Length: 415
Image (cartoon, rainbow, N blue to C red; front, side):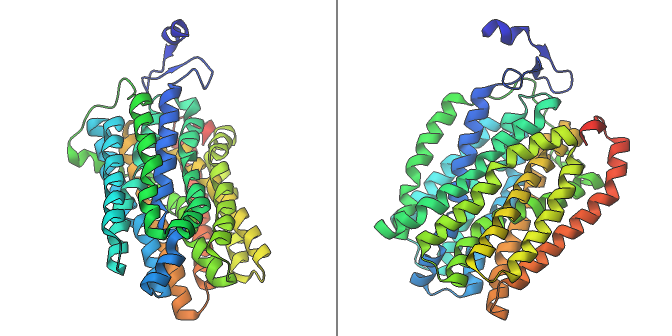
């Protein structure tokens, strides 16, 4: 095994090695560590969503306040991803990830011990949980720097499948809240976080030949390219839709169909699981047919499914539409990050942060707008329809740029 590792060819542009086999072309312990870190981070990032019905009853929150509460971790995570992207390129992804995990564990312990007794307190907790959402800008570079270009879609997809942690939150948070109270869930979450932190320290390893440190202003250079803005916009729809729905569905199911928090958690978990499962498949599909072709189908299907939710008359119909939407959005998440390293390999750390930030902003918009729509109109439907329209706008943008991308990017066969 060691000999096989030493005999592999060094990839000229990434510094990683490849012998044609995905599992032997990188460092699988780091890939596992990145997945586990991402998985548990996402679990606590959306934790306020499954707990929202109970928190709202205790603190007497309005529909708009509930929407803002579950959206705050998403927005905080969006901007903190840029910070983490800078840290990844400055101090390396492993150390950046360790710092972030300690902040989240400390914040949850403080919230459990001191209690969260006001709407302002939920927003403060949401900001701390944003550090968990910002794990995106660490876990993906941690894994992807080990893999050559031909395996980027699979590596990013497998590491990114850690967004399945949202399933854990939806499944277990309502049950634990019923048994011990919702505030106790904040403390209980620290147990698996601490275990994964130790595993992360043992398994994760920074890739050799990292990009050299640049002046701080240089990290914003990608924003001079229109391609960066297009990729950010596409991810605002795909990932924004995924995480926005993951945070909002417990509220939707309890308000719209009067489900118990536990049953709403099961329904949410089914939807989120679908989106998480297909993320690596989305990356592999994009490797096979090209990220642009994959995203074209993603935006069409997501727009149709979200529009369907707005008029769904029954729980079964709504659930079916949500599953289809999540399948499309999850595929889109993997597809966007198959494209990012094709265009910005040298700036992968900061671009992961910038694109991830855009995804978080999209999630904040969806989650908060659903609460506002419910309070102003008495229905969630306008919020879903507007986001469906945004998916069609993204599709129009993709059609506009695809010819230029295929003509100017290297590796056009994978675009």
